[in-house]
Every structure is written in structure tokens, then in C-alpha cells.
Image (tube, rainbow, N blue to C red; front, side, top):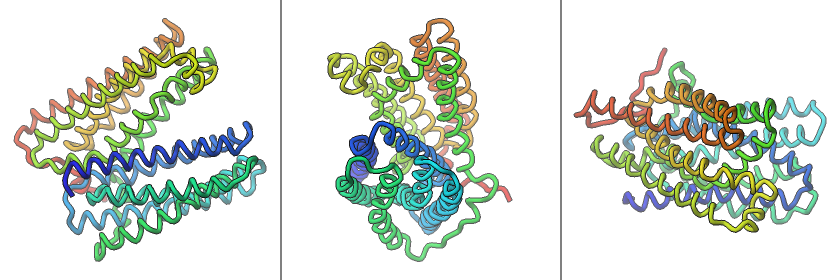
Length: 414
């Protein structure tokens, strides 16, 4: 497949996956009471966290592999089998525990445990197709899932319990899972399956899970903490502002998770880094344009999006838009580092995630909610500068390198 066609399919696939998640929440909101939708949203948030952990442990190391030989095909099979097996074990434990707990939320979590292997397995297959440089297969699978989930939810009646909606949503991914499994089996026929390396100490996914926890959980918990000890409006304002930039989160996730196989088509390391720098400029410009478009929204349209939260969120658009522009540069810097040496990103994530929390707290102390937003922006700027400084140092250290370090090249500890 030509490079531009592969890029188009990858971007389209990310768009379809994002659209599916958005429409699931919209459908659940229309089918549920306020209280039931709150329970559904809480369970869906648990799924989102588990999805991020799964992608960090198996998906992101997988897409860093270079070449399409037997080792890569075997790694794709192994990653999918490992994800299905691990999610089945975790889901069974979750279902067993929640079976003993009363309440609608517990029943919904029990249903999530039952469908966890289906939804996480289907997502793991998307990473496998990306690694095999067949993103059109991932796109086809996600289109099937979109049609099935919309069809399944459309026949539900108003007032359906959260547990029922979670079960219907999860099982609707089964046709896409089965289709993708057949396609992957054909693409990797004869390749070995090895699960033990994924459990060894030193597996690259272990570092990425820590990065995911530090980069995502720390910031979320810090916002909640400031809301608890300071102004509760801080949580709603910041969450409302970041919700408006949801499409950019999709682009950032796409760049991190599915960018390496596409950039890996470029043979020269110097050109790969330059291409990543160009991508950062494009994403930063996109963030600036998106922030400008949101700032120009009429007040009525803004209230249709966020209701009473719109005025406070709109006041934060300059800071949040600037933050997302900086995040675009930092995300692409991390992408460049993962192609040069994946072991260098963890320290940056830890140090500058904590720095962002400190700057947010300091900004809140000095300027209230707007100060907290500008503190987060400054933290993102610091992380972006640190990532590209590290990229420059690595390039100076080995300017004549022809091949980047891949996940498959990393030694595993015994």
C-alpha cells in the first residue's frame, strides 16, 4: 500500500473509532435517565482507563516494530492473544467481585467484566493491522463495529438499565472482533505465538503503562484535588474546556499509537525526525485554528454544547488552546524519541507531569481558575521543550544512524 493511502486509512480509522465512542455516549444519554447516565458514564470511564492501559502495554510497543518478517507477524499474533487472555482473566475477576456488590453501578461493572475480552481484543487487532501496515483492515473492522453498535443501541427502549446498555454495547463489537481475527489469522499464518516475553521484566509496555498512569492519572487527580480543597468550579471549568478539544485528543492519540509504522516507511533517521517535526507544526496549527473557531462560537451555540458550564469554559479558551498547541509539539517530540530510543521517554513524562501539576497549583494560587489553566499551559510548554532538546541530543550523539531502535530490538531481562 502506498504511503499516502496508508496515512489516509489510518486517519479515517481513528475518526471512525472516535465517532463510535461519541455516538455511544450520545445514544446512552438519550436512552437513560440522568442518574442512569451518570452510572453508565462512570463505568465507561473505567473502560477508557483499561483501554489506555491495554494499549500502552501491548499496542504501543507493537507499533514500534520495524519490518514485516516472521518475528513481526508473530508479535502481532502474540499481542492479540495476550490481550484477550489477560482481559478475560481481569474481566472474570471484576464480574465475580461485582456479583457480590449490590447496586446498579456494580451490575454495570459486572457486565463490563463479561464483555472486556471482546472490546479490548478488537482494539488490540487494530494495533496489529497498523503494525502489519494494513490500516485498511482496521478501518473495515471499525466500520463494522460502528454499524453494529448503532444498530444494537437503536432498538433499545428509553429507561434501559446501565448494565443492559453496557452488555449490548460490548457484545455489538463481537462481529468486528471475529472478522478481524480471521483477517489477522490469514495475514500471520505460520507465525509463532510467544506470550512469555510479554511477561518478562523489562518488557517495553511496562514503561509505557507507567507513562500512561503518570501522564493521565496524575493530572486528572490533581484537578480533582484542587477542586476538593479549593474552588469546586475548577473541575467543571477545566473539564468543560478540555472537552471542547476532544477531536485534537483523537489526533494526538493517533500520532502516538499509529504514527510509528507510517513514519517507519522513511528509511533515513534524519528524515524521520524532520517529518515528525513537520507533523508537530501541523498539529499545533490545527490546535490554534480549533481554538480560534471555538472562540468565535456564538454564546447560544456554546450553551448548546456545554450548558451552564460554557461561560467559565469559554473564558479559559486562550489558555487551553495554547496548551493544546504546546501539547501537539510535545506529543510529536515523544513520538520522535520513541523511534530513536523508547527508553528515554519515561523520565520526561514523570518529571514534567509533576511539573505541570506544580505549575497548575501555583497558577491557581496566584490567579484562580484562569491561573490554573495557564499553569497547565506552561507545563506543556516545558515538556515540549524538554522532548525536542532530548531529540537533538540523541541526534548529535549518533548522527549517522540508519535504523532507529525498535521495540523488537530491546533486550528483555531474564
